[in-house]
Amino acid sequence: MALPSCSLSILVARTDIPFMMHTIPHLVRTCNFPFTERVLAVDTAPLTGDKVNRPGVGTMEELRACCNELLKKGVIDKIVDINYDKTYQHRVYTKHFDSRIRQTHNYKGYPILGTIFTIEESQSDYMLHFDSDMLLYQQSGHSWIEEGIKLLQEKPDIMAVRPLTGPPTQDGSMQQIFPYELDSNGFYRFKFFGSRAYLIDRKRFDRLLPLKVLWRPAKTKIINLLPSKIQTLVNYFANKGALDSWEVMISKQLENTSYFRATLSSPKAWTLHPIKRGPEFIEALPNIIEKIESGWYPSEQAGHYDLKFELWL
Image (cartoon, rainbow, N blue to C red; front, side, top):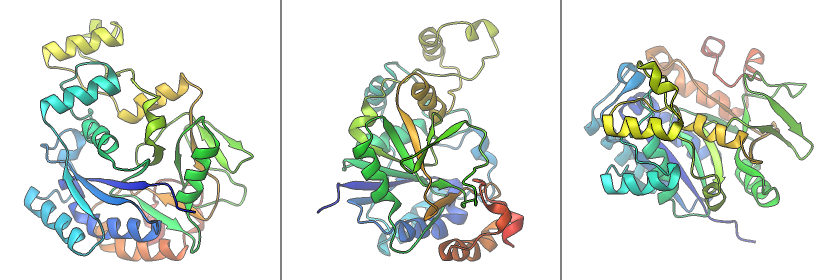
C-alpha cells in the first residue's frame, strides 16, 4: 500500500552555515523516508533579534553555496526563497491571522512568514518540518514518520506529531516545563506546540486558523491593555510592535480547542536540540552525530530535550 505524500521542509538562514552541512544530511539520512520533496526554504531577510549575535554568521553567498552543494549531492530536491512579496504576505497573513501585519519575524528574529510559507507551498498532504540545527535518532527498520501519519489518520484531534523529546528514560518520564499526559495509544498529549520539529496534516492544520495574533509587551503600557485585534491595528498603522513566537500562538489555539500535539513515546526515535553552537560544538558535531545515529547517549542525557554538550565530549 502506497504511503500518503509527505514533504520535508527545513528552514535555513545565514546563522545556520556553521553546522548545516552536518545536520541536514544527518536529518535526511536518519529520517529514511520516501518524501515527495525535500525542500530547503531560504530566509533572505536581514537578521534581527538574537539571530544577529549568533556565532559564525556567514554571508548570503556562503549560504547559497551550501544549499547548492546539498542539492548537487542529492541530499535535498529543491531550494526555495521565502516569498516576501507584500501581496503574498497580505494573502497568507489574512488566512492565518485574519489581520494585516507588517512584521515578518518574531521578536527573536524567527521567520513567522517563512514558517507559514513552507506550509502553504508544500506539495504534499503531510509536511514534516525540522529546524536545521535539530539532531535525530531513529532505530534501523523503524519509521516514526509512518507511525506519526498513522496516528494522524486515526486520531482526528491530533494537530501535530513529533518524536520523543530527548533519549528515553527507564520510567518514561521527560524533563518538561510544559504539562503532558501519557495516552495509552503510545504518545504523550501536549497543549504546547513546539516549532522545531513537527509533522502535520496540512488540511487539518487549516482548521486551526485563524490564529490570535500575540504581541510582546509594548513600552507604551496602555497598548498592552487593548484587545489583540486593536493592538494589531495600532501596530500596523504605527509600523511598530514585536510579534510573539508563532509556536506560542499555535499553543494558545490548542488550549482553546480540542486539538493537541502528540509526542511519540516510542524509544525507537528521539530528538535533541543543541543550545551551544560555538566553535567547540561545531568541532565536536560530527562525532556527536555519529554517536546519536548509533543510538548511544550519556545516561545523564536521558529525558532531556536540550543537548547537554559537556556530557558528549
